[in-house]
Image (cartoon, rainbow, N blue to C red; front, side, top):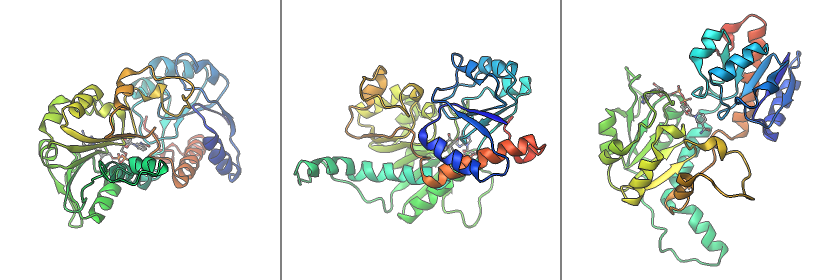
Length: 332
Ligand code: NAI
């Protein structure tokens, strides 16, 4: 079986090779650093499977070319599939599988890291101390205890995050339209999106990007929030309207912003751009705020998660080709 892995980094190769060497039927894998898109799709010629990540663009044109080139399976090595035209994949009869869960803790803990850093100004304190500046002005934080945290999307990551916030003694509100039943052990209160926006001191997004969640946080939503709210997005960039967020920051309506994802991240994240400059003016503006913490889509990036991603992707591919498609985490 010949696999072509797009958007591949040294760490992908390391964990994939390690897990591949532990299986009896080895996958013959080529690691490519390029993203998969309309310009690079020709590179998949002669492969049985393409293995893709969050910023590969699997639109109808790319999927059609993959099918024409004889690709039999798209194996996503991520949970989200907003970058795949599933309707086109279905029409083409080109199956797509994914890794539905690898470590919800990795992402939930990273969301928490952003909250703690923004609140207690850890990055500013670190820089000051390196300059022998031990003053505390500008570093004032607040107790997380007793604050209200609004969680949008109580799936695997949302629930891991809720548990952490409960540990800090926060009151947790949840908006999740698919959550119809609550259990006695649920440690949160279900509310409407309006109630969540109006009552939360911290809002953290953990829902998928779909047509209905695109720009869920826009000007109207920001207007409904408490002044000085903290907004955290570790889910997908397009859940928020970044231009509206910048307005909210300038008006001091948003007091803190922590993001691990950005709407136009595919041209920026995962690359070393230190020898160049940022062409994206919206992103560059975001970087100027002292109360904005940006990480480059690294919330998933733990040893445990990379190991599980590699293991599940390899299992998905093997299961699919030994006629056990039901065990291969198919999304289309
Ligand atoms: P999940 O499928 O377990 O949970 C998603 C939850 O969102 C579900 O409970 C669903 O009912 C809810 N939901 C759907 N539509 C909603 C809406 N309109 N409003 C509120 N809630 C809604 O997914 P999981 O594993 O918790 O992942 C969540 C998201 O996190 C993924 O879709 C992905 O975009 C993102 N992610 C980010 C990573 C990173 O490295 N930054 C890594 C992994 C996932």
